[in-house]
Amino acid sequence: MATAFVDDIKEIKEENPFESMMQRFDEAARLLDLDPNIYKILRWPTREITLYIPVLMDDGNYQVFTGYRVQHNFARGPAKGGVRFSPDVSLDEVRALAAWMTWKCAVVNIPFGGAKGGIICDPRQMSLGELERLTRRYTAELLDFIGPERDVPAPDMNTNERVMAWMMDTYSMHARHTVTAVVTGKPVEIGGSRGRKEATGRGLLFVCNEACKRFNLNIPDTRVVIQGCGNVGGTAALLMDHQSYKIIGLGDITGSLYNPAGLSVKSVLEYLQENKTVEGYPRAEHITNEELLELECDILMPAATENQITSHNADRIKCKVLAEGANGPTTAEADEIIFEKNVFVIPDILANAGGVTVSYFEWVQDRMGFFWTEKVVNERLQEIMVNSFHSVVDFAEKFKVNTRQAAYMLGIDRVAYDTRLRGIYA
Ligand code: NAD
Image (cartoon, rainbow, N blue to C red; front, side):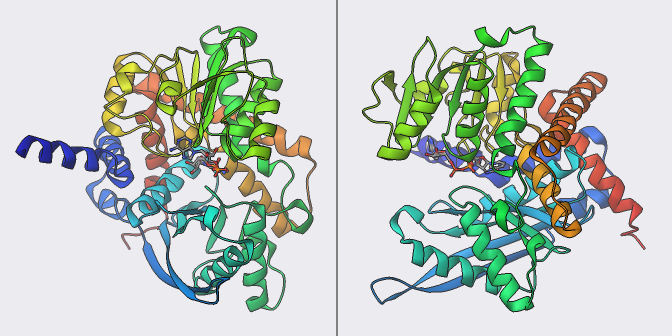
């Protein structure tokens, strides 16, 4: 009984994303021999906001939703980070995601700090009108804290261009003029950037291409398994399929598909769009989400949510390259096992940074009022992703650390340097 209790506590701790982030942060700080005063500053978020948001529901009753915005760090510029709608949102999760944004922006060297927002709700059970009222009230409550020079939200799990349009409109109504740069990931017609919707998936494609070069993998023979068919996983799957990678496994929350000869990603996504489930899809074997992650493959891309690779299944992972599309898909405990198995990890704060990179481009374009072609966006994205991939890999080799430690060390070192430059000690 007592052992079961200890195991439960261990599991709760392992799957707490904030603990996962802090374990990596602490390790990187130790390896960097980080100044203890800078350590004290960076280990805390700057600001945490909790909101209780009353929303008129379609049945005429009110429901009060809990929402958060955590602003982790401003040393390198305005805070930046997505907003997620999910029943699983918690303050610890948002805290972790906000800190990951700080390190991620620093890894790809763009001038933002980190933030994240979330609302505890189940968008699948809500009407469009309810979601719009929830989004607008959440935005109105945050008016004093967000803005182009303060904190710039973006889409994340279960939020999209439409939600960003509502946020931009609500902020603009209060500012009494249109403020496009208050959020990124908007529709192109109202200040969004070309290429933003595909940017995270495209960034993943670029880093996977670099990994293939590094390990002499021939793209048409490279077997890829992707968990998640949303903005990140779905787009990465389409772009990789288009570049003739062999996508042998693909899954979402409703189930997973396997075809060793390669799936037609387009037809899977169309089926999913139409049926809202992969159940019944004809041209593949149906497997569980657990089995999907354990398929033998060259590249495994968890692109759904946190804690998918843990101490329970890490030893059954059979990939050469782990390209983390989601934030925090691998727990700190699983890292040890994964690196022991010599899996080449492209860590989340590098691998999925394409989204925030093009969000940065969107913010720049909004402030200039001058919009770039998709070709320019994609070329600039490629340059940043490829350079950042090599910075992390070179750092790992130079300092004899693994790629996860290298990415954290690189990011934290840049934030620490800028904190010192700004003279926080004065
Ligand atoms: P999304 O809502 O568009 O898609 C999520 C996908 O994951 C869906 O297909 C869903 O069915 C699936 N999924 C969710 N829970 C699952 C589970 N337990 N098992 C299997 N499948 C599951 O979200 P998204 O924008 O694609 O984000 C996915 C991940 O990528 C999140 O961790 C997010 O923080 C991260 N991320 C997103 C962006 C972005 O630009 N959207 C950028 C960087 C990182």
